Length: 302
Ligand code: CP
Image (cartoon, rainbow, N blue to C red):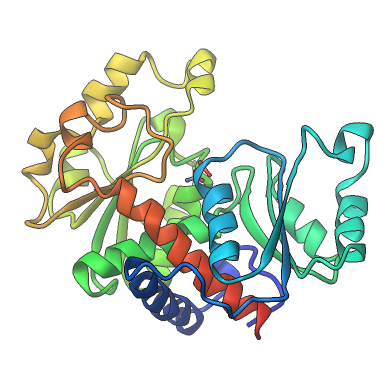
């Protein structure tokens, strides 16, 4: 394993399988109530978040604690970043206070790579701009594998704002690498121009997205983009692109509905589906701890 974990494309299927397998072990321990595995005792880990987060930041911090590592939380709002300190200088400072790993989220694509190239600590990308969110893809693949026992041949539909979604990009790369079939659907204004070049199928209508799918994944509509006229209105978005109980009847038996969160309830997913067992959004969050524990352990004991 390399020093850093920056995007799924830097990994390979063997490495991803190893993270998923170790994640399964971690999940079993967590479900037994074991929150004090000591494999990272003596390690010091920092979360460096320049953008808001609930799931990624807190699940990484719990993962660190459950493995026995010390964790320092640095928020852009209260650190010397506010006084103009650069990303690289912040990273060098974290090296100087003996940090073994830095988990970074930044609005600028490529920031984790810049940091990784300039620090001794391992760097994990917790989401950079529209580029990548590799640990979200890992936890999503883990969740699919947990439900279906495989990724190979799985039919996965991703619906919504593909263009601005680092989650979609990382999942497409990861799922294709693991042998799943991926199709996407959304408003034309929210699909990348060269979407097919990513290797996934672009559906021509909503029925095609739902038909024959094992997994239907919704993506957060970034409400700030509505002001730019990229889709007409929230109610029309729901009408044309929403995940509803009726539409799920076209999908395969045992279909699951996924969403990386945060969810706009009743927009990407209908209120009814949101509360159904097929919607595994909370399982995804728990799986985020288990898989992040696996990844941290593998990076820091490599
Ligand atoms: N899925 C995800 O990245 O959620 P947060 O923004 O809450 O971390």
